[in-house]
Length: 415
Figure 1 (spheres, rainbow, N blue to C red):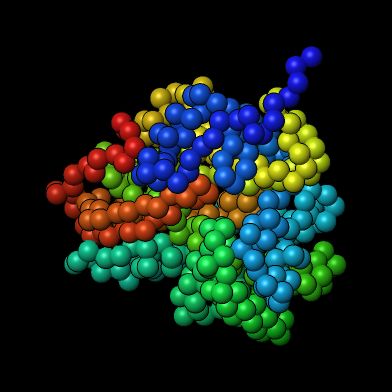
Figure 2 (cartoon, rainbow, N blue to C red):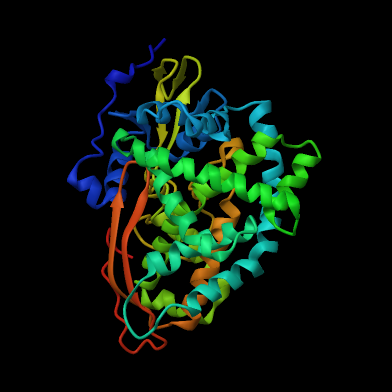
């Protein structure tokens, strides 16, 4: 009988290397060609698609969020109390299931499609306001504004609140840096967000409407949520809303607009947009890895994992694995019969807003490609951590004609 290996016997990955920071997906692909499982400073690293997919839904792997907050050193107070009681801290079981149920229904794939006309209207209004006579920062003028405006629509808030929602979301999402230097800013942002949400709920209780917050209040009235659960969900939707969606929209714009042939196709054949967005999420995912923690001692791929071991499913490695995707380094919107990307997790840990985010990206790309076939990327920039892709710069000119378009070189590989 073969004895399981210890974590200390695993190869060591260096996410701080210049190679990883500048071109993470080829590096992850190279690691995955040599190993299915490894270790790093943060814990055990899974690099194989099947291992990652199984880990995401494994009942013996719980949420890694409590350890994240511990590393950040969040002090006692309202932000920490919110975190302890939000869905992020709950492992599999009745409590997590009951918390998810109302939102799973209200933000289902069918519900997201019903939101599409409103999202299209939001996107159109925002794009209409962007100047076309000079290069513009599309992060602040477009990518941040779309999800934050959608959130304002959800909670019955004026569109003038969108900047506050975007700014606050970006700040509180710094919990994922695992860096306690960001703790004071995170705490301050959470405090203002909690006050804001309390005000929005109180205002909506007085006059229910046809929006998501009103539906959540109705779910509370029906006994599906208590008052604290309702509040925590409205905070959570703001917390995760702008930051993740903004970066996903920006990544899609860069990857698609930098390929003139594909961009032209999308402008004349909008039915191709969903396939193109799915390929963006595979080729250059916002979520590079997702965290879990071992609930009780277990064995994974022949490795003994003690209770409490942090485990990371490296989504970026799985998406560039030639065992699962044909020529994964090639950007190809015509892929068929290949695995679904793992950007949004799975099972009871899947991202509840995944369908809404996808609609936001699709509607943005569809409108930009149709209206601005000559959209020119003037300057772009990325930052890659072990957890996320972040777009640091997106300066573009919204050109209605494509006479001066030229392809930008691929950041990673042939495409």
